[in-house]
Every structure is written in structure tokens, then in C-alpha cells.
Amino acid sequence: MIELSFKQTNAERIVRAAATLLFNALERSGAQIRKLSDLTESPQYGFTASAVSEPVGPKYVRITDLQDGKIAWDSVPFCECPEPQSYLLWENDILFARTGATTGKTHLVRSPEEAVFASYLIRVRPKPNVDPGFLHAFFQSDNYWSQIADEKEGSAQPNVNGAKLSALKIPEAPAEVQRCITRFLSIVRRRQDGENLDLPELPAPFSEQRRNVARIEELAAQIQEARALREIISKEQDALLFSAYRKLSELAPKRPMIEVAPLTRRPVTVDRSKTYPQVSVRSFGRGSFHKPHLVGSEITWEKPFAVEAGDILISNIKAWEGAIAVASDIDGGRFSSHRYLTCVPIPMVATARFVCFHLLTPEGLFHVGEASPGSADRNRTTSAKALMQIPIPAPPYEQQLWFDNLYNQIECARRLQSEVTAELDALLPSILDKAFKGGF
Image (cartoon, rainbow, N blue to C red; front, side):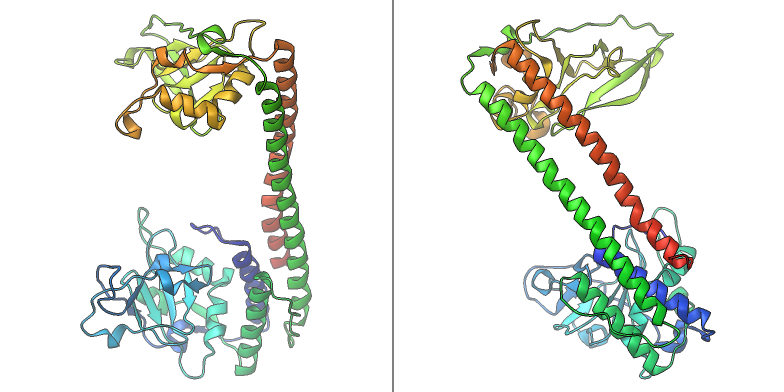
């Protein structure tokens, strides 16, 4: 399938697959290929104005208001438009996003309120003998998107203009076939939205595609069910881990961090001829990551410090939002900047994993926040002295080792689940590609 620059919902993917199968079959049947300009009135660019929340004029539909096949009219802003008649939306208008990340995305207007459309949109109106749903169905298919991909202009800001839209090629179909395709795609979408409807029958040469679409829907539902189950398991794993932590910590004595995992820094004398591989920490408890090497000859204000596996690595400017992690084996031997604090647990007193887990709990983050004064989020810096006074629960060391083992088992399961999720993400595109090539 053609790659899009914006993310589609599962419902949109299934509709796109169904539309592609139908229009592929239409082209194979020998349908005459027409230009879009033969089937619609001339494209029209939208109105340029500033959006405002006060009702100073008609509503002002923008690209961002077109979401998942709908317009959320309650959230659409207004604009001042002295002569709105030329830009008012009508029933069955089709809107195109002509620029930005969603270039080519379309919307079929149904039951419009009094509204005009913005300048980053293009409107086309089907001619009287053309079913609007048929045109919009084509605009969901790969047959359409492949042409849009060829016609996008500009690398920094892709766009498609009215002339190029008019030149798009679309297979022609008799009125009855247009209506069948429109109804079929409408039912597919409604089924994806949860309605209990049967797929309508299709005339030749599309009858085989009904079975293919039904099979795609079935497989997509199974994939979605597997993903939902994976999310349930992940939440249960989180709950199990936190429950274990809470049972160990609620009756444990608390000791200041300096008595559990004191600050331990390993300053490096910079050699201008060497490079220093870096390790950093993501916010919100998302672990460590590696940054490009620092070249010794280019190090100016940064002061590298050595990191060893098992260190608790804390960003002193983002600790308050969870930039705290345990350095892994592959992090050992790397270097952090002076903006990171390294704390090393005292043997037989604490484990790095248990201390880090506590610091990322709501209670721990509260204390980290208290140790990170500042007038604004970006100016909040964790005080090493205050950090060392944060109270840390200290259950028996053997219990902390048990917790670490549980944590590692769950993380191992998470990695396997992530691999399965990646396979699930690749499965539906593979199924669709096979269907489009006639091997489904």
C-alpha cells in the first residue's frame, strides 16, 4: 500500500482496503478512464481568514476539523466573511487538504451547518450524473493515493493544487455500479464503527471482492483483539509490579538516600584525541538511550562523567518529570554530561532497581519535585544535596532482590510482547498487499 504522511485509524485502513479492491476490479473490467475534471465542477480554493471563538460570522472549517470521516461542529471556530455565499459548504461537497502533512486527505460533506472552508482546503462538486459517494470512495483507494504521491510538490511542505487534482484519473462506471460501490463502502465504514450490518451483495465484476473484504475485516478484528489483549496484560503487569513494591515498602523503614544510594561521580580528564560515547535518560520513566559520541577536541563547556552498569542515572534538569533510570550493561563504559547525577546503591543495603522504581512512583516523584526548585518547569534543577535527603523505603535486601527478579521477568515478557506487537503491526499491511495482488 502507498505510505501516507499521516496516521490512519483502523476503520480508515479497512475502508481504504475495500475501496482499493473495488477500484482495482473496476479497472480490470475495462472501465474507461476519465479525468476528475470530466466528473466534477472546477476546483475552488477556500477562504482566507483568522479563526475566532466568537460567533462573528459563519463557522470556519479547517484541515484540522476533518477527523476520522467527521466534522465535530461543536469545536469548529468562526470567522468574519463579508460575502460567504461563494464559500458556503453544501451537501455532497468534497474537501481536499491541499498542503501539509495531511495533503490529499478528503472529506465528503454531509448535513453541513452554515460554514465556509479555509484556504488550505480545495472544494470540488460532483456533476449531476456522478454519485458523490462514488467519487469519495475512489479518494480512499490506493488508486487515488498513488497519483497524489506522484503529484505532491515541495519537500518541506508538500502540496497539491487544483490543476493537478483536475488531472487525476478515475475509472468511469455506470450509475448503478456507482451506487453499489457507494453503498458497499458506507456499510464497511459503519461496520467498523460498530454497527451490526451485513455486507451488501456486489454485482459482477465485484462479487469476489465482497468475500475478500469480509475476510480482511475478520483478520483485522483478530489482530485488534490480540492488540487489546496485549494492552490488558501490560496493565496487569504494571499492577502486579506496583502491588509487590507497595507490600515491600509500606512497612519498611525509610532512610535518606545518602544512606541508601549516595551520589558517586566519576569525572573524566578530557583527551582531545579521544571520543566519548554518551548515555542519556528519557523523561517519564522511559529508560536510557545513547547519544552521538562527544569528540574530545570539541568538548567545551560539557564535563563528561563516567557511567557504570547499575548506576542510578538522574537528569538534574528533568528528574522532576521522571528522567531517572538504571544504567544497563550496554550503558556501562559510556559517559554522561555534568547535567546527570549518578548514584550507586550501597551493597547489601539497596538495589538500583528498587530505588529507581520508588523514585518513579507518585510519592518518589513528589519528593524529587520538592528537591528540584525553580520558577518554571524548564528552570527546575535538582539539588544534589536535597536529593540525598529524599526518604527511601529500605526493606530487607533479600526482598529487594526478589523484587528485582520479578521486575526482570516482567521486562522480559514485555520485550517478547513488543516483538509480537511489531509483528501484528506488519501483519495487516502484508494481508492487504497480498489481497491487492490477487493472492488472497
